[in-house]
Image (tube, rainbow, N blue to C red; front, top):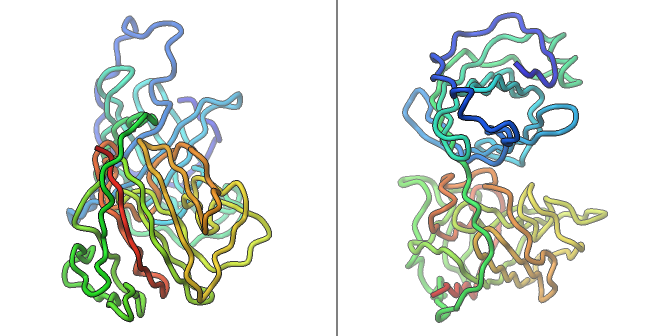
Length: 334
């Protein structure tokens, strides 16, 4: 295997049987590494619950490098990854190891496999990560499938008529992300308000290419976000940062930092304008463009799904902070 960062482990669990490798004759001498690129992932746990993930593998002078998005949170670098020509294997910081069998054609295809956790002692964990992590959980196999992410290039579009997503009086046109969940969303003084951390709010309509306009008001110190197509989070946060980064207001969370720092005023109404065509996004905060036609590499944490090629809804994050919205409007492409 092409081990990028050698790692010794105390014990390794048995993984799913390997799929047939590609015939050597089918691979051109100058063909790019088939595992390289971006992958949309669906993980299914032992209880049958599925959630999305994403990873990117790159060829670098030192070997393979891998970046991943888990169930939630920002993208992170994978500390160990290996590829032997037909099988992908990588280990996460929590000690879980993934094994994937590459199936299909060289320039398409899917990855299917199982994942389990195994024991890594504290000395090995410190050597690998530089600090102590909690003990890994009891080994639990899960199934996962990865498909190559679509290109979703930017293109010329014709715009339709603007559509109001909030009537200022009711929650019509919206649903909770999880049926039966605790929700803090209500309508107050003409605004859609999240009174306490609860469930996300999902638009009933889905969109492909669109322009989104809204006003938001964050309470001091609060954190929230708006998910485009339910997959790409535009971060909204009251945080005094020295410079713009991929977690400041208006960023695509963990993926794209604003070109300039434009802080949202806490306790006041701020304007957000977003244009998403394919995976190319532009963001303006209070009339100032802070992201200009940048491609989003992949889904962000807590996405609804990893089906990047499909239309998706607008999602207002509700599980973190107190935030109000008004004047929510979408202009879809024709």
